[in-house]
Length: 232
Ligand SMILES: [Zn+2]
Image 1: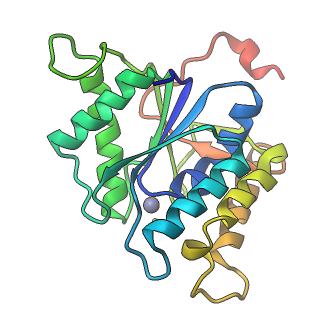
Image 2 (image 1 turned 60 degrees about the vertical axis):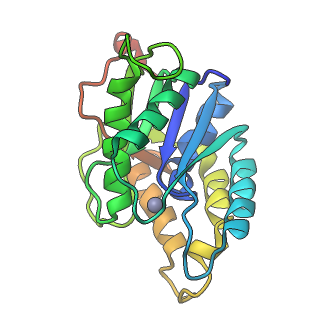
């Protein structure tokens, strides 16, 4: 398996695009090796099917320029932070050796998202253990940031906001790929879910004095390599 700079762990196909699609596209443009690991198929849903979701996911990945994407095949709607699931995720961390993990935020109304967030923290810890029977060599992903979902309508303080002004159209194209989830069967009048996603990106752009942004939150202090990081 390829090694990655950034691994985005998404509970369902479409979560990565909705929350950090712009960050993914920007990171790829900056020549970082970015991967997305969807934990579940996301199915069943009212207007989707496994086949439709796979096709939508491929279209979305192309819109972002993603070349590494996998699905761990864990059970949708009943995802648990179990030992077996922790093992499966820790083995992906060991295989891809990401320098940063983007994980779901720890508070959510969707139980799968809460479980996925806990799984990321737990698997990160297990990944580093020596003298374990996990596949692969021990690896401690040095950074883990969390992204916000759209289910829980809260706006916590962001630790950092990524400027995605140049990537907003790539993000929205990737979001639009999920017609079965975000368009089918929904009222077409303003504000649609797609409008909400764009407007939230605009809000976070406003927060940093730019056109569009995406927030990331951290449980640990954010390490920077000197203050030159902020002098752009
Ligand atoms: Zn989701």
